[in-house]
Length: 92
Image 1 (cartoon, rainbow, N blue to C red):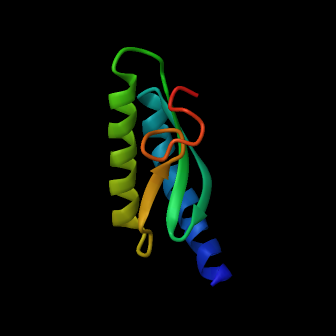
Image 2 (cartoon, rainbow, N blue to C red):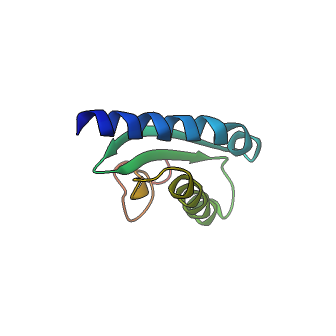
């Protein structure tokens, strides 16, 4: 079980690394916080500006869609700093 989670984490990290240049070009950054119960937990940051909350939610949705298509066994992506999974506050 631990080996499967470690493999899943490695797959998530590899996919994020692949996506990172495009995300950074659009003013966004994403970091992996962890993988728990086959759900990747990420922290998103976005260039400040109007509509930032909507853009952040759209960004999370796009990341989740791409990762679930590429990684079998991944159940979802939670952004720890966006609703409804807010742990830190979406503006941090």
